[in-house]
Image (cartoon, rainbow, N blue to C red; front, side):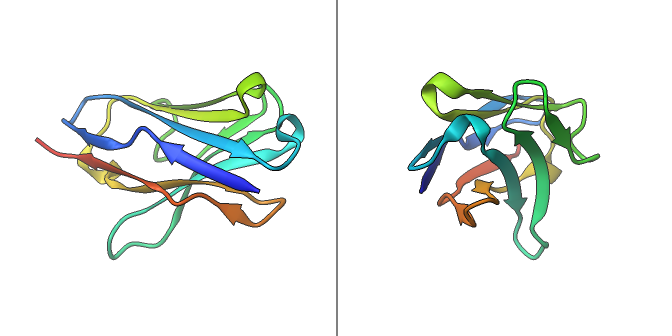
Length: 113
């Protein structure tokens, strides 16, 4: 099982980023994938989940209406579209497959002017 995140970077407040999580080693289309984030000196925070189906999603209140999780089963990839970013979104973001207990290495998102 392997998860590899990409797409992080530095963005100004109000900007957007799209994170990707490329998966391999399991049957992707039926597997739940989640995004978490962790900022320095803060606890890990669940961000969003994709429940192995195109319309089965869930979001933390802190990102609802700004972030969208989606998946491309043909490419074994989950995306996290992040809009209207603010400095509080600064964190390392990683994807996680709870059914396998596996996570990626993470990608850093920094929101700063």
